[in-house]
Structure formats: C-alpha cells, structure tokens
Length: 159
Length: 77
Image (cartoon, rainbow over all chains, first blue to last red; front, side, top):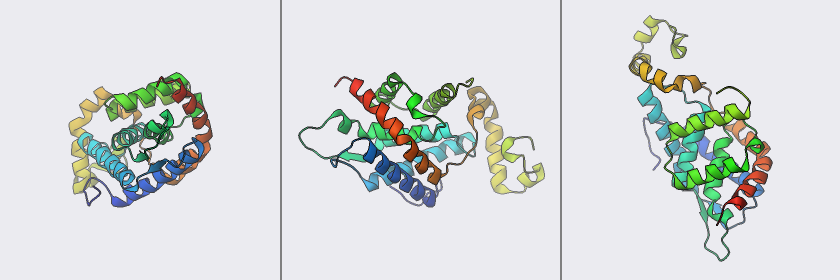
C-alpha cells in the first residue's frame, strides 16, 4: 500500500492519481460505459504508487535519471492491467465492453502519453494490444520499445 | 562533463556532491549495458505534465472511442 518510501514521492503519486481519475471520467463519458462500470479509488491510488515504485526501481538499477514517455506509458499500462482499478457490478447482460474496461482504460491512459494521433492506429493493432494486455505477461521495458516503434511509425520517422 | 545528465556540472562538482557522485557511479557501471540495449536512444528525458496529459485525453477521446469500439466488436466473444 501507499507509504513513505525512498523510491517515490507521495506528492507525485497523488498528482498522478488525480490525473488518472480525470482520464477515467473522460473515458467513461465517451466510451459508452454505463453506471455498472466504476473505479475504485484505493486501487487507482495503488496503480499510481506501483507505477512510481516500479519506474523508480528501474531508474535506480539502470542509473537513468528520467524515464522517457515510452517507458512511462509501458509502466502505466502494465500496472493498470495488473491491479485492474475499474470494477464491474454483477448484473445480467454484461458485455465485452464491461469485461474489457480495464484493458481499454490502460490502452487509452498509456497511448495518451505518446505523441500520436490515436485514430491513425489500425483496428488490427488495437486488437493485438487488447490480446497482449489481457493474456500476456507484460515486460514494461520490452513493451516500451514497441511503443517507441509505434510512435515513430505513426509519425513517419525512421525507427 | 560530456555525459548528457551531467553536462551542466564539472567533474569536481560531481565528485563533491554525494548524490551526484552516486548517480554518476551508476552511469559508469551501466554504460556498456545501456549502449547494447539502446536505452539511451529513446531517453528523451521529458517530464510528464499531468495537466497537459488530461487536456490531451479530452482532445483524443473521440478518436479513440470510435476505433476502440470497432476493435472490441471485432474480437470474438
């Protein structure tokens, strides 16, 4: 749980928690999600804390001072996918939209860190991302390379 | 110093500052590994602005919503 830790600053964690909460509200309003999809504040706070812990451990062990946006996106997606801060109420008529809400939130929150236009990504790539996040073990550093290549490709730049 | 993280410091300044010295020691130790992994190539060193992050989310949600729903529909249940 969130506590005093040498690996992160609690102000940063709270700031990230609030921005992720805002992003959830934005997503909830526009993705056609109903009231059965809610976010658990405590779990979202744990996402923010886990993100900083993991990112800062990586920075310490590699001697890197600041992580780039690809790593930020990858670490964020990893921890949203693992902790699953969105909760779905039990009711008859649960759809794929309900079941995939954490994955979709992870993709949106992560890709929003990159310098890309999200509508330029193919449906096939989005389905690949959904499968990857749902069923694979995410190595954030390898995933960061994939996100770097994605951004370069979308901006028509050499990798 | 030529290293990008320490370019604003002289060697003497780094060696006289315990925190900087420790960071520099890490860098020296891992230089070869990072070269091999190419992590330096992607490290642009930017700091995320949380306010700008939320504004960008507001701007891009429409585009995202349109295409992600199609992607979800294309997944077999």
